Amino acid sequence: MKPEHIIDFTVPGEPKAWQRRVQTKSGNVFMPTAVQAFKALVQIAFAEAKPKAWIPWAGPVEMATSHYFPIPNSWAKWKQEFARSGQMLSMDRKDWDNLGKIISDALNNHAYNDDRQVAHGNVLKTYDKAEPRVRIVMAFYPEPTRELWQRLKA
Image (cartoon, rainbow, N blue to C red; front, side):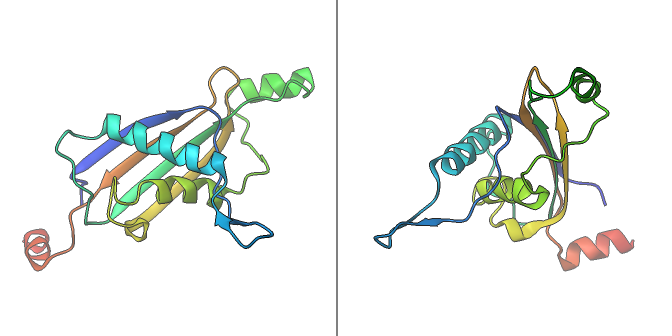
């Protein structure tokens, strides 16, 4: 089955990972500011890339995210060159699932109704010294209905 829409967009800046809410000694619970700010950047980038009359999608979604981290200046020259070549995958301290989760959470009620609709996801961690960023490619599939099944069977 082919997707009905494909939206490809980029979030500038260093990739961030999802973090748990923080509880203060006084009992207040809050989301870290860096997480809130990054989620807002994701929402802005999606809003600029989506079709004008877009409403949150109701069907299944496929999402691929590519996270480009800055290359540390402290690394040996050979390691920096290796990272710059595009052939070195990142083992950055940020877990792959938390990198995907912050993106999928940010797009709730924007790209789709709920991130449970993401039926297939892919996370790539790599490097780019010149331009740290996150590239997101989303494929939106029709909602499963009897009519769709009849059409596919025919």
